[in-house]
Image (tube, rainbow over all chains, first blue to last red):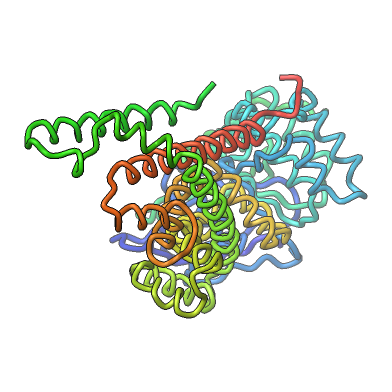
Length: 230
Length: 254
């Protein structure tokens, strides 16, 4: 078991309606999973709750076998007093220097490691931010739109790289791209508004691995299921 | 090239002199009340070198007092940024104390420390300390969530890093506040000298007031304005240099 959420209830301060009403779902085993749903449905709030730095809620969230959860999001910034390469190197444990170099190369960041963070494009910023998380010690990494503004080809390359590099780790990928979550994720938790019950529906994705051929009809079916559930 | 601030001051000063001469003309006032330009020039020739020394003395005290206030405000604001009882206590104390006029406390300082350097320094520092402190507390207590999140999540956050992030992200504000408080340091020193000290341009102003010599007062004001503008201009240049150093890249292939 990776994440077990049971009967989560939560209402934003000063809001009339609850954002979560008896929300329950569970994700099994390591691998690449997704949290999918329309804007404003509470994906980020739920992700923060799972990471342990969200608001107080009713219910139970358990992450058995997960000693360390990290949460990354697309608006994060690196400090501006030195270049991106220095910042990433500084937070990389010595034993993971090789991995860092590999990730910088695979994520197409070689050209900008000597630049300040503010000089990067939005896509480069997100890739640089994700790189520093991937060289940390973690069991579960929540990627809240961490690849936003990255072009589709590079995004696919990055996702496959992560899947190949961390087969034993858990990932919860938050994205609005239905084909991406259907193609690369093992389980897709579709989060819906409180009017629909159950509020979360789990759908199996293709969990595409590097060098694995894509079954287009399976992908279309998975996509349809996700869209229908949402 | 002289900084823009000097030109600005000289224009304002000349305009004020022109205004005084106009008042003199309209109300037919004597040279005793408002000196003629020739009297003013004569007085300037007589007292300029002495007043220059006094103004430099005042500026030196103001700079040291300002530096003291910056260091103190930084240290206290770093503690005041905390969310525990110590931070709350410092914040409440700072907000309450700053409402109390320092000039009203000045007699106590002169009674306790005498009319020497210590009193001038302390009053100068106190006058610019509270505005600095309130701004610094505001800056250091405000989290920069998008940067701090990673360090908090990965257990790397230390108070030094937290302060560094917040100071760096608000460097423009810090520089503006610091430069702005320089005027207060100058004002504080002059007030202290005027009140009870035995040196500095404020002391010379007090003597000129007792002699009812407006020409001397105007010469003193000219020097105060010039030195305040120079100090402000210097701080602004340091600020621009700092921002340039902080923001510009070290190199890169972009």
